[in-house]
Image 1 (cartoon, rainbow, N blue to C red):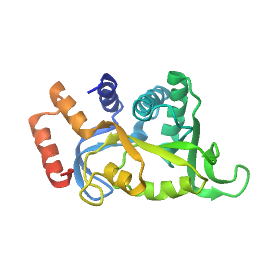
Image 2: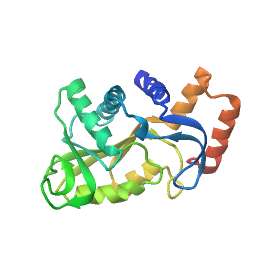
Image 3: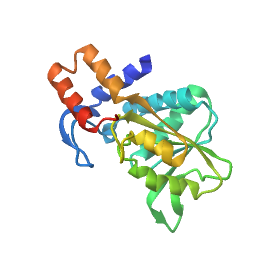
Length: 219
């Protein structure tokens, strides 16, 4: 596993964003781990988060895109931080865009925040984590409605490596449904392997994680 991925796992733990215990997910699944990107709250944390996303996007999709689209709400600060980091790390000005949950009819009117999206734009969508793909059902029509654009791909921070609505993983389902690539900074398989090696995940917790993936993991 690349060095920046190991650093990112340590970063998630240090920020208390990735936790182990007993959690009930929005889907109703009982999970031994939980990731909450809403806990990145300081300037330093957001700056580092943006840099990890920028590295992953650069390594996966290169520089041939124009806009980072961060869906409301958690995608907004992630998109802003990553746009800044991309300029700093790679010297390319990427435009930032997000959506509002409710369209505004005065001042900066419309459903979008940040840069308008125009014909010919190439877009990378950026999110915290995708379990069921439900957010993409809302996001992709908004992006596509803005003009003749190309969605290059989706980048999330953590691939939970579990089934979405069918037998495939959520990221693979999104790829099949919409026809663009999907990727994550790190996968839960990588996280578990690294933390077992470091002695942070013991045998008891590893057994509960294995049991969870026996039930919900991608076959």
